[in-house]
Image (cartoon, rainbow, N blue to C red):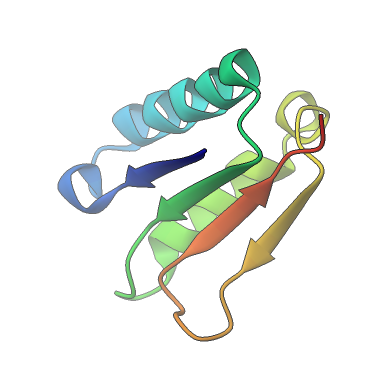
Length: 83
């Protein structure tokens, strides 16, 4: 099971972005999903940086195993969980 979060619709609303990221991480923990795909899009890269900063928070980092930036598609980030 893979969960997916597309941030295109809320790219310019910081609090909504953080809330959506928190919800998808919480859902992954609740469902014990092995993978979450986050799509910040290609744009200027600011949204991707925001996502990566969120994932680096100590409380969030403790929940997942690793983060993978898609080498073929700059606009995707994978968050891997180990259960």
